Length: 179
Image 1 (tube, one colour):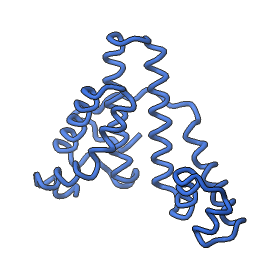
Image 2 (cartoon, rainbow, N blue to C red):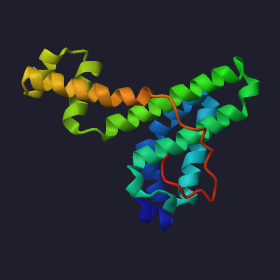
Image 3 (cartoon, rainbow, N blue to C red):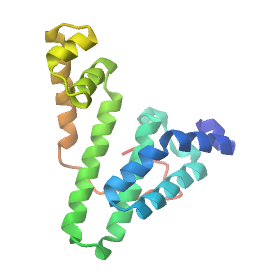
């Protein structure tokens, strides 16, 4: 995909957009709480990818994670840029930024955890089943289902850890991997 984008293949950008537009728009909307701003962030992210196809470095993580990081940075930048226009002031803006950061970390953790852990968590949270039912559905022992759920939850709990510095939005010369 990256090579096709570097060659200027518009079809590659279309495929990338089809695959990731809902992720980008959803994350941008979660941060900004504004449809117009989310639309603008979506355009900016895909414009940046089109203009800078070599900015993605696979050694830093998946393409999905990189795109999510770009989106989060740009949405946070837009939110901070226009914080004076909306109600709530800087404290509300920073709370939304922290929430978006935690959501992005959780998404990265879930998508990068081993499939058995992810499957157990999805059953527990999406299907609302207990460890006994998860064990039956996964074809594993109850002890193994409990172990998978416990480990998956431990991994997810790190998404809620505070920290990190504010990140600048991407720029045309920005070649960093995901934050």
